Length: 219
Ligand code: DC
Image (cartoon, rainbow, N blue to C red; front, top):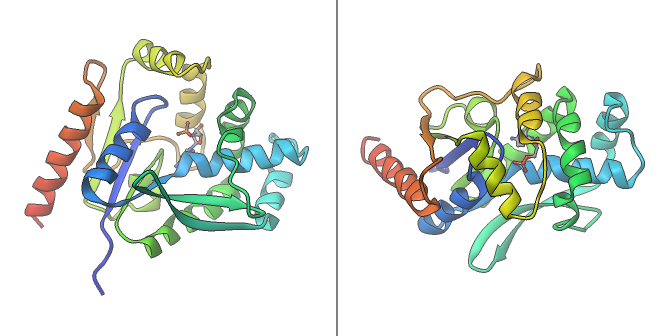
């Protein structure tokens, strides 16, 4: 059977991963997977269930027991994977400042990461993927030939978040994501690094697509 193609897009917070991953998925007709949304969903679930996100044992136990399902939904022509919890997808709730503050704690727990990586690998059931996150090229699909690492200057990334109406300390979150012991944010072997501080998303996604086509032709 033909193996699905995995495009891994990792990078710092607000480096344009989501925007570009969606543009690339649309252009190629691949399925989009936002793995940050999966970690955010667990953080939201813990907050809702009054589980202390700093209590690794309690969070890991909740993650072992919660009732979830992966689904591939069509959102405005883009096929995207969602993790439903008790048959609900908390689309808005996972974007609140409270969830954003809780998520790095949840994402640092090794047993949570193990669970998430397993679900993320299961997404190949939906076909070719554009998957964005922090450890896709290093940990989830380290064997893929299509790895990208996006970054931009901190001032520019903070400006982008503020333009989206979100105030948050990106430097603190990046530091936690880069310094955690399990699967820290790193540039994957063979990844194409794109610093898009002064690039539009159209320019960034075009650069990604050109590189994918080059690598596909060399296969
Ligand atoms: O991309 P995002 O801001 O939605 O990610 C939310 C958090 O989840 C972020 O703090 C990093 C973490 N994360 C991770 O550790 N590994 C991933 N593959 C994706 C996200």
